[in-house]
Length: 335
Image (cartoon, rainbow, N blue to C red; front, side, top):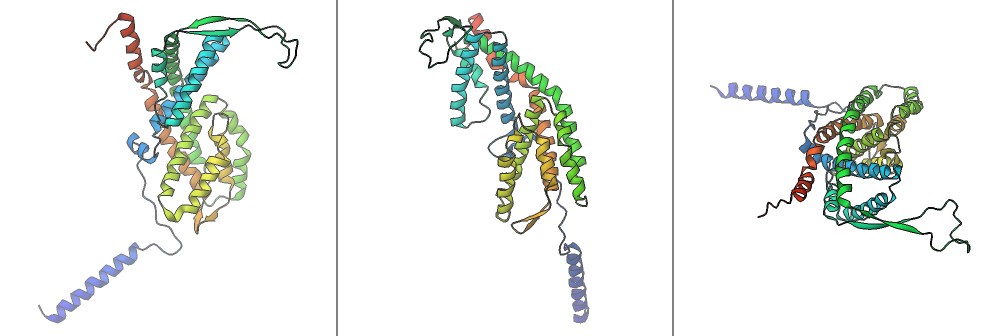
């Protein structure tokens, strides 16, 4: 093989490599297509959620809603002693739990009640007419009576209420998933006009009527809040997206923080987000419609993860149920 032949082959090889590189380059002003992410596993959801895995947050909210319903049930039947006791114990427990900041431990409240001793609660007597507290003619001692409260019985009620609530939430999941998927398909594309965004904002009242249920909005708000924190977590790892992170955090968790609660409206958040024009944050073009679409997609995955865990809700209290059986039968397995 001659030197001229070898040189010619080298030139052809370099030319071929340059052509391949040019074909892979993204034209100026365009963005390369992002590869699809697979976030369907609970483990991946937990990693993206940072310090708040989806399952643990879902279990805590389920326990909080259970206690709320049980307190309301005691008030409905005018059982003031149990209502007063449960409210006081739950308040102390939640304050301690918030200080520890350990997600997924709210269910331990059932164990605390199971181990608590019988307590006497003073129930003040209700008068038909009550004077103002500063009135000198008001009775100093309104009277009342003491009632015994057995915390173990309240714990049994919470276990039953929790299982029923989890079953009810599972029944709500199909409608929530259907509504969220509709939000994914109904988000306008980049070629949509401002009139379409205004029309989406004007339909907030109709969507709010769909989410009239307290529990539906509660679940939808939790899923959206977790999805927002996942996005913010990823943006915080990219220094170039600092301005984008600060703006989105303020918009989602501060300006529309109430819309992520049970008394708010997630659809109002999305409608207002889509109605905003395309802007520039930190030198990067930000399309609010893409953010809304990403929130919807992540919310779907989170709701599916929550639904799977809710189906196993009765098994999560098995240890407490076994404790009741052991105490009733007088069994001691440590011997």
